[in-house]
Image 1: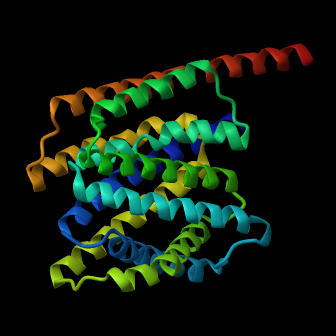
Image 2: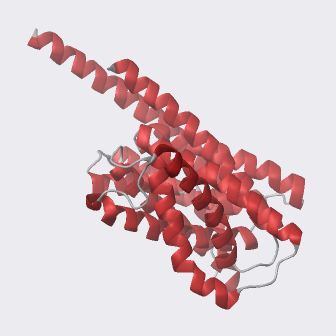
Image 3: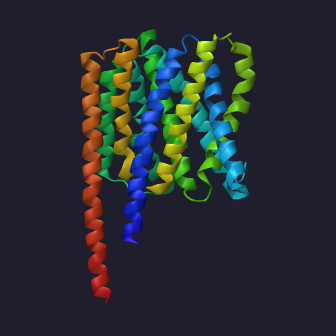
Length: 303
């Protein structure tokens, strides 16, 4: 049993790293696509994901809409995910790439809180403290001010909240639905909701913009399938630290393609959030050891 748990944990870690890098590359292509409405970018991104998920459903003879008892959670996951993507794309277009993605990486902290609130996964004072520290780090990145320049940062935080709620729903679904069904339901739901708005705000695109958006969709699919599988394999508290690998990828892409260099306040914010994430990871590892030791003692006493 322990081998299976460890195996699932490793699978979760590999999936979350693949997801983080996939989303980072997606963000770069979204930014390269230029001045297009966030709704339009979201539509193309989810169109690609829907096609890939549909192929997997047909291949595995899966379900398009999931089981009846899971529909409510699937709709919630899709609603929060759609809000999260639109907000994230808005932030990516207007901020330094690594700033936008770092704000989005507040979602793993929020997942821990939401899983505790809605799924009754255990959380304690130490974990709450680390979440608070992470938000202090976010303030260094946001650099709050009472003017319009702070709006993209706030929208970025809203995107992180949407993503966290969506991932909490994925965690709630667990193994009740196939990963490709979850991705297809979300992608199709998003397309239906966004299409009327997309028609109204649509801007003509050049061929290179279409290519960038299609590539964004492909890497978004890698990110989407990765995160869906990751939270099916393991609890948020065990794998969330590895989601920060995407920030390194974002920083490299930002410097290489956009000549963007985070300012000193943002770098301090990154370090604070990284430190909080790493401390939470170490603390959770310590808790696991204590729990395993207690279980072993209990088994010995029962014998």
